[in-house]
Length: 250
Image (cartoon, rainbow, N blue to C red; front, top):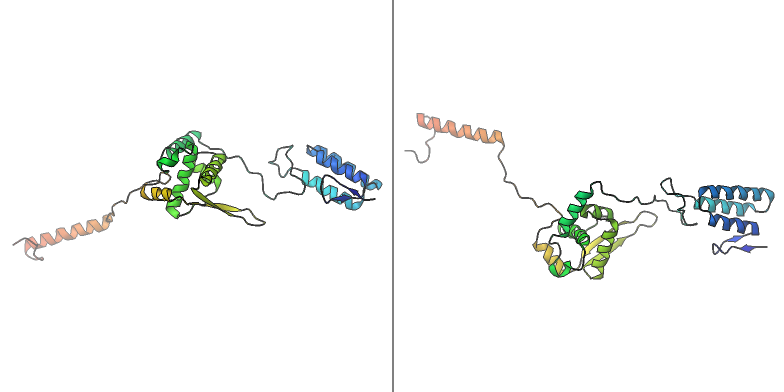
């Protein structure tokens, strides 16, 4: 008789023993418990209580319930049927927290936002929007990943996400997602749609990008020395009466 499993809709097991093992797998909280259930599974298969098809399916469930990698802490298991090929995201930490704090305060206190928009955001969120505005002013669009924006602004990922969501809610930004089926998605494209903000950043400098000056072009030392010697030689020959006459000299 076919026994329907209530844990995974659409899954049908051929015996009550297989259903019990499936539920035991779902309740496991450590790799050791999974190993114990695995031994029970193959023992029941050898005794004929669990068919080969059910044993193969349950063995795959056990493998899916195991940690994704050695970086995953014990007790955090993947959901059955949703095994990811990507490693868990590592927490982002600044190597110099004081420098990050100073950078956040500098960018957050800059004039990257008009005065009537600054009060909508915190200091960290203004630093994020300053980085985005500087890149949009330079390239017309911002395609920085969240981690890069967070590092440049001296904040965490959550602050970046909150700032972008709030700016989009106020109608200041437009977010374009770039999914890639079967691969890691590309970073979102961020555009400024507020005409007031665009005119503001167009007139003023960007605090997110170093402000430099155009240095005067210098003549190479060899060229300058040669021209000096040449002029000196012409002057000496003119004084001796053998060179071209100098201007302004009778």
